[in-house]
Image 1 (cartoon, helix red, strand yellow):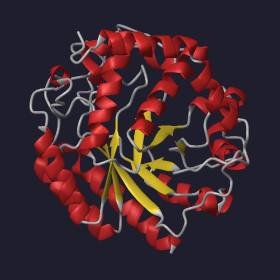
Image 2: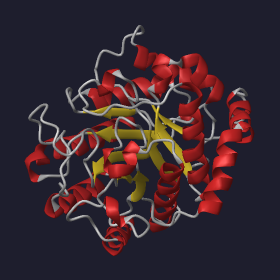
Image 3: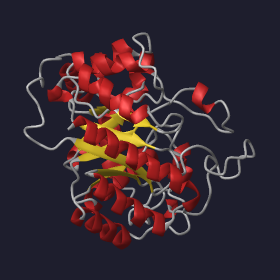
Image 4: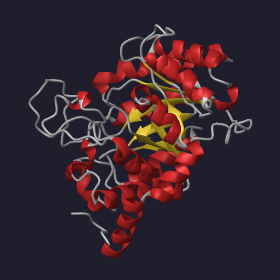
Length: 349
């Protein structure tokens, strides 16, 4: 199934993964030393003000799953993307002072290594590079995102059902390397990794999750590929909500964290809210994330709370997420999302 599948390479890789001890122990040792990287700070770098936009929105289900009628949730074989809205949002983001856009690529690119996963209408690699150059001219840093959570990987097509096999590792390795090259060795590479639980897949026709050491072995594999490509891994932090002891023992300090909380209560007893403080106390760099999914005040309250409760040396910036496809029907949500970032940024300066 996998293009560029070289048996010798993957016999070697399989042996390394099964042995696993070297990578796992090295990362775990780093995670167990909370002070090891505490002297890291932004070094005078600008605070990050980011928005997450989707090229691909195929995150949740199989092609023709009849459950539900939300066309934005069910997977489709065509790219859901509006060029005019994209251009308008980039212009608005630049004018609002945003300096980073995280692009969820998924199956929205005709990858040279695996063109078979692309949906109809997917961008060519040339088109992607043109768009990235345009963003940089607008002083917007583009960052790639590929979500490898088993709950959000339907964009991988048939390979999402090959989880943790040699074929799967080959495809993931190729895609990470190609995406990093297309983005010219980006500063960060977002790997997703959120919500991989049976509860989150209860409506799926086909459900599969990784648990215990398998989750960590695969996670370390992604991290290794991103680091080989010269970028810093970046993930959602909600694994820590259910497994805090394991998370803080095994999670490398090199991995940038985006804990997320989309409510507006910010009570001391809120598990996700506490995670902002726990990450800081354990010495992790963070880009806290809010959303106008339900509450328009979410992002502003996230910025206010985290500026008071996360140490400046570990607070790299903030990210907003509207969780809507880049379609004209969703313009209002996107426009409001960027305006909310602008308001919070102005208030913070």
